[in-house]
Image 1: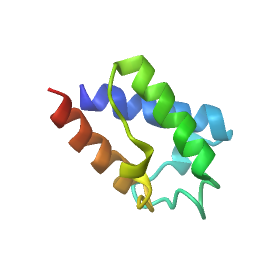
Image 2: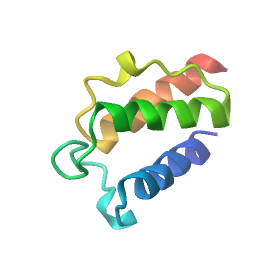
Image 3: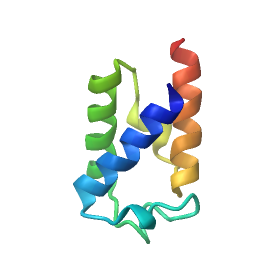
Length: 82
């Protein structure tokens, strides 16, 4: 399930932020490289929460700096959900 959610999260980032998929490298900075702000993060989390019926609290993701950070916390939340 993680790969499906991670793939969907990246697809949403591409769509929401008008990015190219190759920009979503594990070490890409959410702020500096992807120009993601807190509202983008909340919007992304709301879409993922609704689509996959997960409880994703934006506060859990506020220290994310990179795609890898984001997907790591996402993985923890998915494991907690099981």
